[in-house]
Amino acid sequence: QVQLVESGGGSVQAGGSLTLSCAASGRIPSFNRMGWYRQAPGKQRDLVADMTSGGRTNYRDSVKGRFTISRDNAKNTVSLQMNSLKPEDTAVYYCYADAYTPRLRDYWGQGTQVTVSS
Image 1 (cartoon, rainbow, N blue to C red):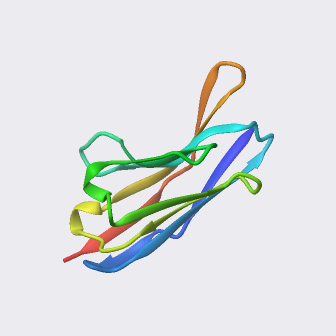
Image 2: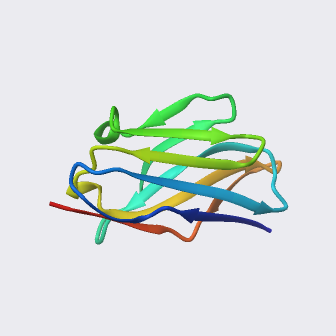
């Protein structure tokens, strides 16, 4: 079993910053992508940012220039530095990872709430 545990969510005023962290534990495979999704009330879960094991990153357009993803392959951790937060960033943020085991399989954290007030 693989567990992904997030930390670092909370409440902040617009313009503020938060850092989310995620650590994997258990029988950890060699992760391909690690990253973050978010889901606002009544909306679908969307990719925020992810990073491949080789370091290639992908960001949704609305967070480019404000959010930075980082990853430690040796420690199986992924973090998301969020700056210049906006009320529209309010959502539950989920840590995500996938691995070829040998078929592609995905893993999810339990989610952490981020609330940005205006």
